[in-house]
Length: 230
Ligand code: SAM
Image 1 (cartoon, protein in one colour):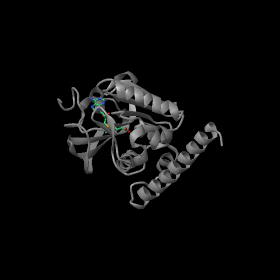
Image 2 (cartoon, rainbow, N blue to C red; image 1 turned 45 degrees about the vertical axis):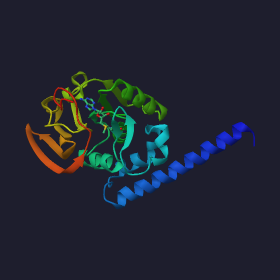
Image 3 (cartoon, rainbow, N blue to C red; image 1 turned 90 degrees about the vertical axis):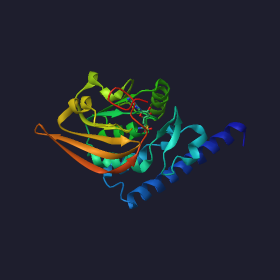
Image 4 (cartoon, helix red, strand yellow; image 1 turned 90 degrees about the horizontal axis):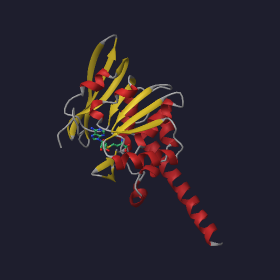
């Protein structure tokens, strides 16, 4: 084998290894009860998490844990992405707002579920993370995600309103701008608290709002005007 062939052979082996690992994780999340809807399961099968994980941590891409992505932030654990996708009751064609782009992985999963007739707008406060997320999304040819930089605690009024909004960091309370930018009917999912928080689902329907606590979780803080100070 010449040098180029050896490299190609290595890439191919790595690709198959990640594919097997992804399959194993999807089966694990399904058995544990985190994944149950066909469209969500298919998204987890098709979106390669290793692309969204920094080079040095790629071997851990299919361990069900958050991983460091720089700037003191993390890519969420796969089971948390699964819980949030299932709770949001996502459908093809929906317009989505994500607050907290991070690596772009969660946005890629949601974009796969809403399909090409849907759209995901995602906002990140760190320019560097947003730039890497854009590259990651381009690498997997994901064309229905728009990444913006700014304070997502104020939502993203330029593209309102949204069928679904979800926040991937802990807010002291549900930010009012997010409620205002949500369609009726619509669903808004926010971890409420300070690191240790309650995953909180607000449903808007016929001009009424209901709030349900889906259980405890751990997230990095939402920092901004309607978030924490630090
Ligand atoms: N969804 C991400 C993924 O798939 O990798 C994980 C997100 S990480 C747990 C939370 C993200 O929220 C961090 O990248 C953090 O910088 C971001 N964040 C915190 N406060 C924010 C704000 N006010 N506006 C936008 N992003 C914010």
